[in-house]
Amino acid sequence: MTSTIELSEPSPGVRVVTLSRPEAANALNTAMGEELLALWTELAADPTIRVAVLTGAGRFFCAGADLKERDGMSDQAWSDQHVMFEAMIRAQLACSFPIIAAVNGAAMGGGAEMALACDFAWVADTAKMGLPEVGLGIIPGLGGTQFVTRAVGERRAAELLMSSLPVDAAQALEFGLVNRVVPAAELMAQVLERAQVIASKAPLSVKALKAVVRGGAALPLDQAMELELSEYNRLFRTADRREGVAAFNQKRSAVFKGK
Picture (cartoon, helix red, strand yellow):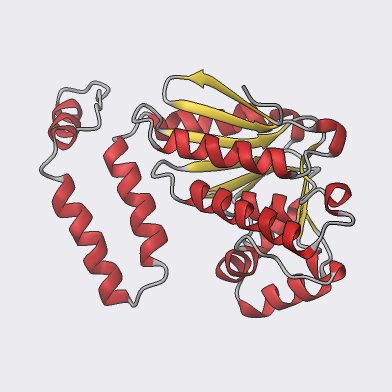
């Protein structure tokens, strides 16, 4: 039983994780961090999950760390909380299935970092994203500096991070922080449609693509190609590859079993 997040299964193989503290703009507090850590760890061990969607309840995606909870925290308490938040984001990153961010509203600070830690993001046309930490005397600490730099390049990253000014949905798309801007009322329907498309594909292949895209991005080209080939050579020996080819030739939908 969780108090700050909700989990649903709108279609087979698809899970929706909803940050649910709407009265606090879905701010990331200790309870939410602990519950997300436990949830991502649990979902990572579930072989039936093919895609997850991360979104927020109400008008906000996530306003970032709960500064009301942090007000007056000792340095040790702050450190202890952040160590747990680090474990939370690592648990999200460790999921072998793709995670799509459906950014329904403002995603700030740690909320932006959770969205950027997803494999890709679609945003409502009313949403905005920002990393305001420099105005609080800190810097992003859940991967934000690296996610932004990898998405938009060093010069844009420097401006975004050092100014701490948020960008609207159109700017986020232009900069490469997100993949698509969708009318707010249509966001979840469109994201779930895309999630179902991905869930219908060969799950071993989808997981391999996640590993190769993530891992290859940080490698020299020759090493990245070796990583790709290692996955390719593993996959063509699977039952799902044989099913995929048979289904194509028989003009039917493939039934993939992840084997």
